[in-house]
Length: 80
Image (tube, rainbow, N blue to C red; front, side, top):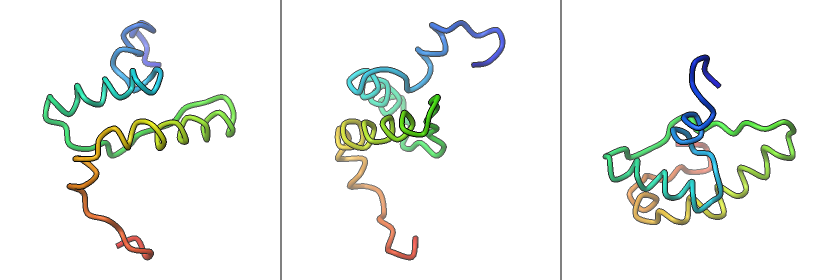
């Protein structure tokens, strides 16, 4: 957390919460014109917690925005 920023402000400004809360925040960013996240970080105390956050994001948040996914180019197996 940044010095001088309250916990409430930090939570409000970042993708923190239940999958529904995170989806609402992503939708608000989308309405404001943001069309991508280039450095989404998962912060946790353990690797298993981080993997669980990533699993929830992939299972619930990403599929909630099919139009955004459809507009993105896909990568082939070599990453191109």
